[in-house]
Length: 318
Image (cartoon, rainbow, N blue to C red; front, side, top):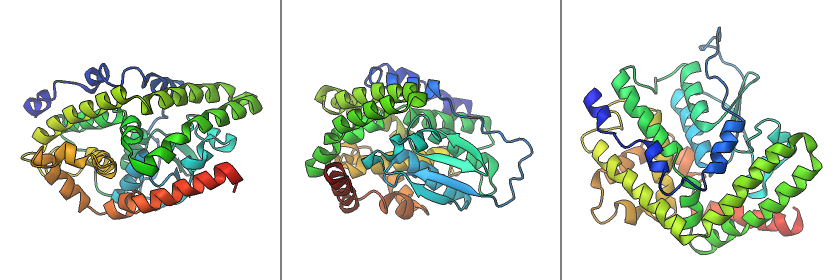
């Protein structure tokens, strides 16, 4: 397997030197400020049913990854939606649970886990069900590469930068309001002021990236480069590392579905381009959980309904 792993010579870190090196800095700082907790639980009875709570948002890619992982392992959870469109993730009560102010957050019998990548590994490590990580070290290295590649990609920029029509305009129009909300909450909650300030820096960069056509073009080009590599990776495999469905397939299922959702699919794998990516995505769409955890939440009628609700909330406070 060393030969296969060595074909992945261009690391995600090298990719970061291109399109996303500038505006990802605030995201990295947020993660460094509040690192993910350990996924190791000494003495935990992994066969026992126990209370699991998931704070999530339906259309959120990171929430989709975690919901799909829970579904793949057969773990039941109490799901509590945190509506990002009306900034419920910024409310002090939630910031005290997840100081990064993002979704998802998993609470397993009182133990809190943040960061979607860490949560996915935590679920696979600490609950019974199908193994979602290969035992072979070479295959594990390949899986990790593809997990890192998508985790470090500026998917927010691709999403917000490529939304077209009324949905795109409405989604992007909320970012300045979010900045005002953060300033108000920072000034009103001294114990969380530094966390709100970190979110302000991130949101300010977010505002800049989504309206910059050059940045968005660079992000799209970076994704095309990744998909060139993905096309070669899956051309003779069912899944990313071979016959075993892994965490990497869950993660890339959400990425490809988001590309499809913002109507970049034809550019990325239409008209005979990257045929193995297209076939791989078709297989992913047939996996259990795709309809329930992605398509159910990520569709244009539902998105428009949510955004209209955000606009009503913005102007009428309801």
